[in-house]
Length: 477
Image 1 (tube, rainbow, N blue to C red):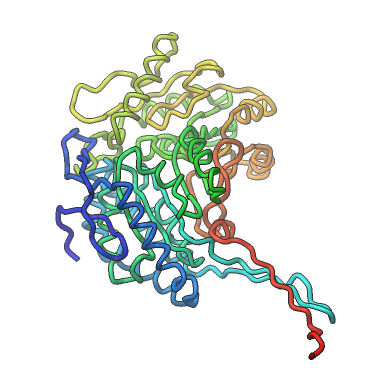
Image 2: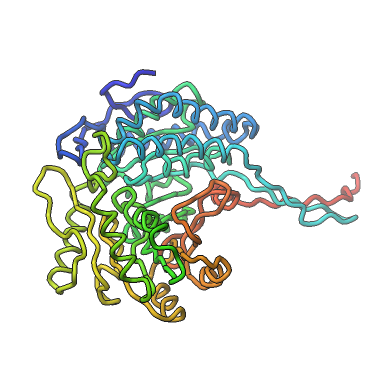
């Protein structure tokens, strides 16, 4: 299906223009790409009504047919991946290869989730009665996706919600709505009208969704600060929530590693997608015996990395996605400079158009510094020195966040013992950022509520119903 430069929302299976519009910018040059429809409260009502109207038939549809719908959406993503990933690069900024990974990752997630089974548990089976617990759909799901991985993180929500028998109102970030709107266009006619509705809008649309009485569950990916607001708003109607929030992931590098062999991996653990990954390494603790070699290897590799427009051949790192986040990253750099911390590389401000921040590595700043304690979500890494294992585990755990962590060592058993002590939802040994649709992904502490992926994530979109049947029928009148 050819993709043109017109963008409409999808409500009840039909194209809908916004009540207004707003521009979407290319972060590599700060120029507008297109105007995006701006959903009004009345149009959100229409989307919710379409989802509610579609729910009875969809929830009653056999799960095999719902699997087919997920596979049809996956097929549409794959068939149109070339056009979609180029559009995604223009609005998100990431290099083409990573944008293709986002699109095809969404297709893969749909395919994998489609194969899951929803369990039924026999809780009692005696001469007197039988009791069965089922997991039934909740109703209308409001899915709010972020700007760093707009496609795959939307499919984290859409795939299990639809498989479980819910209908969906999906809202992409106002910074990256275009690819998602085009996916809505591609799904028209593939699935029943109203099952998947896609609306776009500015800062008001999210709060309208979280407080909407016709939405039964909110699934949100974004910052912890916004997640608190989502939870507070959803509490008015006791909506169920899944929140995948911020992280300040620690990496612990033990002295037995081969520095030359893993330096590139350590670099991309922190700087892939320009550091705009919730599970990117945000703090890197390196044992004192190898601190200097690791420092030198990271800086040397950083000097080889090409930063620029993601649409240009050879670009490895694009811009920060939006001006708001760009200013936040620059503020953290300015704070580190004002405090007199040593910069191993970077720290300067780009003079070219676009939200570009160079690779910046800060040499062993204090543990209580902002750059260590706050999630930067950009290409800035504090490199930190440690000596004692107990001490570094305590430092790694001394955070309000608990999303991910990693341990790097030639001794896998030792690394696993350390990993078991880390307060994080996902811990990697000798790698990072790997996620599987067959493994639960969620945060500890203020990094989230609930889980995504696997059966755990699928059941987040259901509610339990237990039925008891008394085997002895009542006496006839």
